[in-house]
Structure formats: C-alpha cells, structure tokens
Length: 74
Image (tube, rainbow, N blue to C red):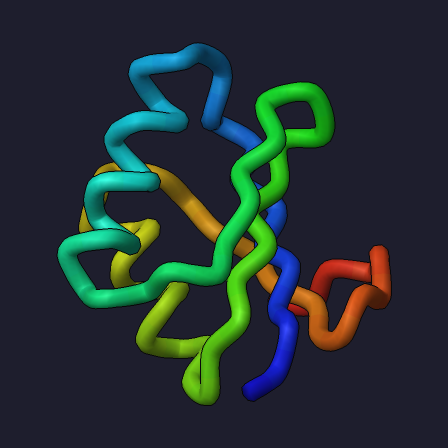
C-alpha cells in the first residue's frame, strides 16, 4: 500500500468531509484522514486513480501527490 495525499480545494465544511468519508468507506477503504484545515485527503491504497475517482464521484475535484510529498501532481 502507498500513502496518497489528495488536495481537495473545494472541500469546505463538515458535510464535505462526511460525503467524502462515506464514499471511501463504501469502497472498503479504512485507512484515511480528511483535513478540512489543509483541504487534503490522505489515503492508504494501491490505486490512486481509483481513489481519485471516488472523491470525484462524490462531487469534489481531487489532485494528488504520492508518499507524503506535498507537491500535488495533476
């Protein structure tokens, strides 16, 4: 598993956080952290594109970096 950090710039409130959390949990992802302060979602997964698809499917744009790198890559 790799730790992916996604910037989610349009995430702004607890409702956003819950919506993303529910999408990740529905996909059986258990290792994740959602920070409203930094507007990031950190996820342990083998497939960054699948996780990005989950976040975007929940209605939010997601840009990712890999392994703790705070430079987000489109």
